[in-house]
Image 1 (tube, rainbow, N blue to C red):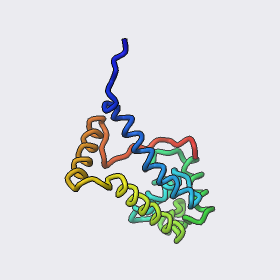
Image 2: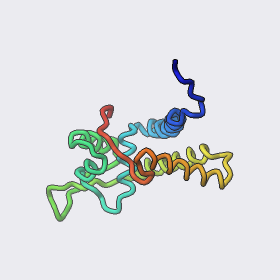
Image 3: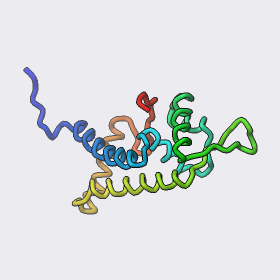
Image 4: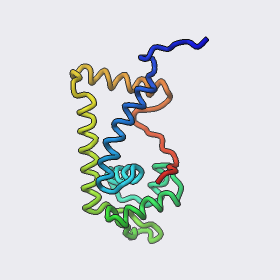
Length: 158
């Protein structure tokens, strides 16, 4: 006989729904700019770098293959979000620079994240917001993860 588990015990299900809700908001924002989620992740990475990276840096950061990264970056370049410039110190390396259209993209992404997170905790007190963060961080740690480090995987749908 199957044990009946109370609905409140399906934490993974709730986490998945919450992720889907936040992911959907970003997907909609990116679709308006004709970007995929994978391209959005790359743009976010580029925006937070102090120095313009090479494609190899992107491969290592996201643990993606060279052909996958080349395709992603090529499409971003064709859409006018980034451009490649030779590195004066190493001609084999082409640095990736964000163009004005790319800066608009990252501003839209930051705004979407801020609005989504504000909506998520709209009626939470300050104490509840702190507790929510602490509990999520503990749950992530319990599962062997870290709230500060995301694991990337090869994306098959790009």
